[in-house]
Amino acid sequence: MLFKGRFQVLFEKVSGSPAVFSMESRLFNAVCFLSLFGLAATSLLDYLIQLPVLSLAMFLVFCLVSFIYYLSRVKKSLYYSVLLFAIFSNILFSINFYYNSGLNGPTLLIFLLSFTFLLSVSPKDTFRFWMPMNICTVMILLFISYKNPGWIKDTYADRQSRYIDFAFSYALIVLLIFSSIFFIRRSYHYEKELAEKRARELAEMNETKNKLFSIVAHDLRSPIASLQGYLEIFEAFTTEEQRREMEKQLLNATKNTSEMLTNLLSWAIV
Image (tube, rainbow, N blue to C red; front, side, top):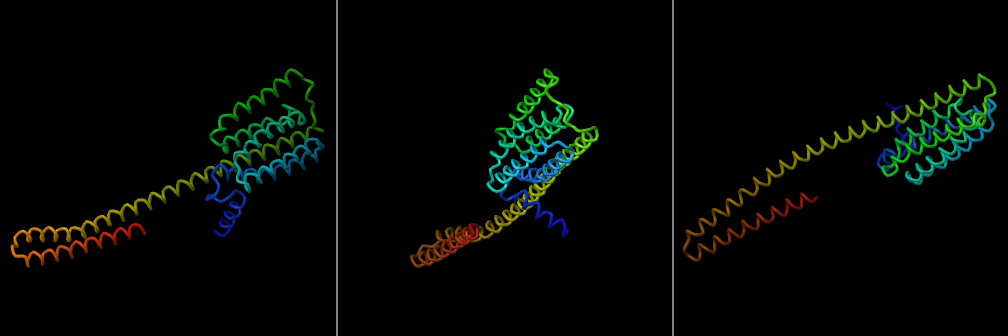
């Protein structure tokens, strides 16, 4: 429980508090933060397997994601953060496609990951735009590489480097997809529990309201019945002195009823 509590606090520092950030914003922040570790490791791996251009490109992506994370987490601007991520990720992944052996590299898997991530965090007004953008970018790259067979060269130093790159890219993609799905499921269960809690509170409030109405009806019934009885008796009296006495009693009963209503309304407002 202690570890879970510490993890919860750390997670909220990274992704943001549910009271301040929407589910999409918190998911975007969390995945961006995790991506920074993956990009740093990828940049180092590309350098070790003798892909210096890709290593530099991954470092630039690392800097870009750091800025986007700052824009979303600190400045609380999800819309522009997602927009920047979508535009620059397609540009940088296209460059990666060229320098990372085209179809012989893992770039298409990265495009698919980027599309999945955008679908999870995009605001409603841009939600449907990313699918045609992603498909068009990939199709253009495939068409150019098909029409120009010698355009893209195999940049791997040896067979082992290719397998290492694919294995690492696949593991990173699975980790990020798992993190996204885990967060979405966790948020769903959290919202479900919150809705159930609100339903219970609403039922309790409704029960309290019914009890209050019952008390008010009971308290009002007695003075109204008294007033009715006074008025009925009032008609039977003929002397002026008796009428004045009944008027006094009626006035007292009316004042008491009015004070009771005022107290009930004051209690209800508070």
